[in-house]
Amino acid sequence: MKTITLSNALLDLPNIISSAIKNNEETVIATDDGAVIVVDQGNWNSIIETLRLLKDKKSLQALLQGHKNRDEDTLNGKLVKQVFYDV
View 1 (cartoon, rainbow, N blue to C red):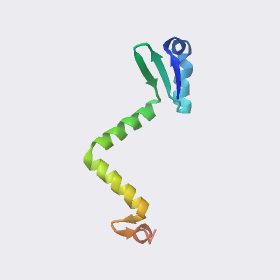
View 2: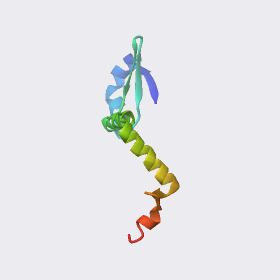
View 3: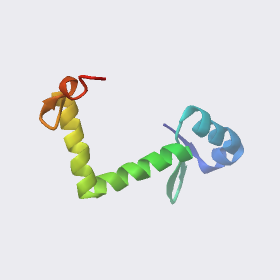
View 4: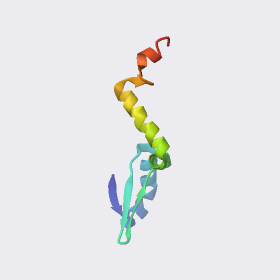
């Protein structure tokens, strides 16, 4: 992630936007009052969805259980290859 000043961002805004969209490259635009980040909308939507899931206790529990099942290679107490034996 690169950081640039507002003055430089104004001069190069089309390239900053293009780089965010095409290369998934975030850019921090810094000012004396703070900073903002230019990020591709698809990435932004993913970030917001992740935050929503992590905030919801039921969704978070299901996510953690899914990771545990994956790590243990199990599904409902059975090995994944037993569950999908006929596939």
